[in-house]
Amino acid sequence: MRRAITTVLAAAGAALLLVGCAGSGGLDGDLTDDWKALPPPSAFTPSAGVCHAADFTEVVTLAGYEPVDCAGPHRVETVHVGAFPVERASAPAGGSPELRGAFAECDTRATGYVGDDWRAGRLRLSVALPSGAGWSVGSRWFRCDLTELSTTEAGATVVVRSGSLRDALKGPSGLRLGCQQTRMGAGRSVQTLVPVECGRQHDAEFVGVWRAPDTAYPTQDTDWAPLYNGCRTALSRYVGVPDDADLRFRSGVVVRPPGAGRWRVGDRGVRCYLWLSDRTVTASLKGAGPAGLPVRTK
Image (cartoon, rainbow, N blue to C red):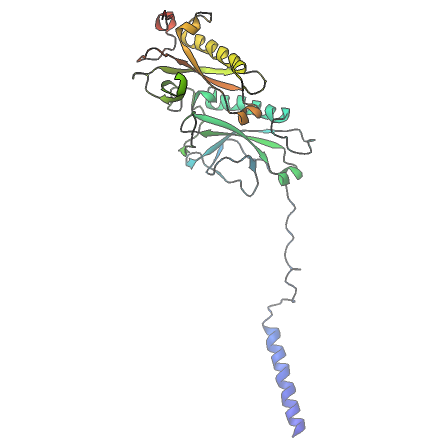
């Protein structure tokens, strides 16, 4: 009797072992040795002529790179991709000659892309770089990105647009800066410029861009003098009046340099506006000549 019971128990144990093995599906108990090895990190280069739904970022990773068709809604458009020397060990720091050189290349390419100086429109140019991990595996590119803004004045917001910016400033465009109406601040200084149709009464107008030399950002009154002089020269060309001592009696000027941070990375383009502090007009003064912008006697 004891031998029969022992035989039954042994058979039951063997059956349980067989059932357990039948459910393994060929697994050997090691959950990692059959996985394929992940590929090593590799460099990538973004494309030009594509857009991005996300906001601009100064550092771009492969995981965050998701270009979209420019025909659909987007916030950023890449107009050019350049390259740093391959022997560079790390990304250039802000304010370095290398980063200023990258901005200068982006500046030229962006102007060619839109058909005029991009600062003649409600646009902002920025330079994006690879991440540290990307740089370590060989990425040496810099990306030139344009963004449409609601205004070029303080408090600007990014516009979600549809359609490429390619050739956007070759002709008349809603992006272009034009006639303006000033809003005054303390001390009779111009605080804000508000775009208006040139056929409506206005007292200011965008006249062009003056490129400042590679100097420190203006912080004192004496530092601002070259910017005003440069914008007066832009004004004289735009209106068609002599750039002489009488020019300051024809019109005032409003200068809008880039911010200190943008100046540090190489942006030296100053937006220039004529300002009629004593009257308003209902037409553009482009090419108006001395008759359109006479010397004021009072």
